[in-house]
Image 1: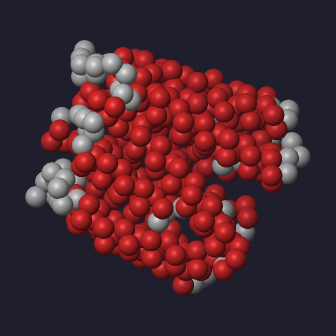
Image 2 (image 1 turned 45 degrees about the horizontal axis):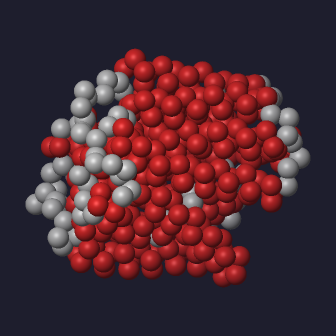
Length: 382
């Protein structure tokens, strides 16, 4: 049920977000600086809120009410996009949407860990991630189809996004039952020093490894720009993310299930090898078939590693601090993603696209070398 909730909300969000930059520039007359400020403010807001929502879910001892609040805010933001008459209203809608995303993220992941039996926890995270990613490629496909059907009527397309968003909230309310006591509430405020000491060295190593993974994998927006070098028409660039997310969705559940049975360090290492291969392919050629192969490898890497890292956070953190643990993990990964994307942009401008992907491959190779050291003391399946 949580997977289908994620699917519906992602269909709604990606239907809007795949068109929003063009809507801002062509319909509302915003410049690229305004576009960057809107996106930067929105993502920063989500990063900050994620930590506090995870902490609150541990302090309160309840996950579902916060998840409902987060998805509800996301749904309430959707009509504002269709009604927007200026960049300021779009900014307000984006901030409401990202606050909702921040509120729901850590409690939802902690709820998955609370509900799923430990022996199939990897499969549970993989399934939720897979269904979430199905929404991430259905949304842009639906956007392309509706824009062609309705002669580029942005507002009509945005209005369609309202329905799956509210269906997601309804499904969460009706279809998901939180365990009566998923975990006893922690003693006092979770961010107190004595509570944070319960987060083991193994947990912080997982956070560090997740940050290294993210540093080697910048925003997918660079994939879209790279394909322009191969001559793909601008109108079809959303298909880049569709293709990546199809592979991601197909890989997430099988590899999540596999993580319940194999050594986590080896699976992480294999995921990094796939990422290195993706970077090198994307660096070496601008032929569309080569770029398609690199994008597919990128999606495969995501499917292999993202559910696994979530499982490792759940396994290495005490149940009473799972929300806090996911919030801190998401914050560090998100900040690292911002840093990686800024560095990638600077490299792209100064050295060219190929060197951007080569540098990412080098960082991924360094991360690969740290895995045996970092995971030596983490308990994983043999």
